[in-house]
Image (cartoon, rainbow, N blue to C red):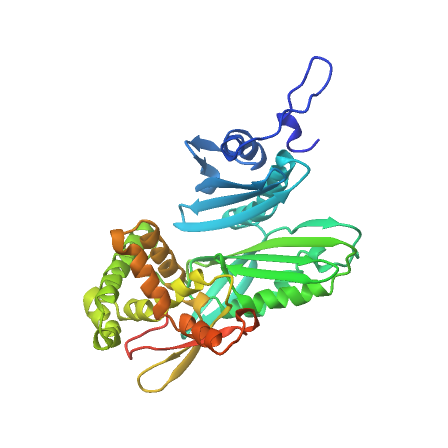
Length: 407
């Protein structure tokens, strides 16, 4: 019996197929009221539009996108209260009707994302890792989810999409380079093979890492398929408490603290209407917020984060960047290894979405985008007659003060 068969109405003589979903609101209600509580295999308490999973100390909410009656996209927002960590998964489904499309999307989330997530919470089947970052030793456990594959037509039995360890063995060395002092990080891997081409995507904390995506794409190219196959998997990587170095911005209060600092920085940015004022933004922000590292992270990264979001489909930016100090010393790091970076991105998104700057919010966003080095590169490319789709992956470098610390 399929997981959705229990939701079919029955006549006195036999089962009768119930009518299909007709709206996103109807789908959401069925997800929260029936489908998710029946498939999550843990205790579920509904609290309005949020499901609380007490065994996992987790809150779960969902948004529904329905581009047509046979395709559904489900946005799952997962908040772990123990880690004060947000997780996100977009799960798509297609079928002969909306109900079957929803079933596919839910299955992908429950049997892939939630499989790995539960392993982390329950400490099941950990894979040990050891890394060094900024001269500090860190120890981790990785929890590898099951893969979930969708295919049409025969494929070879040794297809990498069927091997639970294949993606991990491929990506482990590169993922270790991208671990700094995070408490928890999650990685999404997606691969698809068509007869004419292959697709690869790797996201760390929902930010695509293009170099890793290309590695997965090349793996998918080796799969033998007649029509189509796709595979998805997750890694949940938790640092041991003994090696974790507490951050100034841990927990919900820490997020609000960083957010208030970012607001103060953006006020300085908005007021920097001369080259002199803009040139000393890093120093002025340090004096204002009292955290030199965060001040210079705001100065270096916020404009580029805005541009990466604005030009998401037009440009690929490497997460490997070069930091240059005043004395000329250089350090090459991955942005994803900086413990502040993803939270900084979240703060900016929250500030813009909640329009902290009122009627000036759109102007501020535009100024952030147009001030970025990414925008400058794109403008130069267009002015020289180049096509944006032909640009290679962009690499960035930043000047930072002597007081900047890797953390």
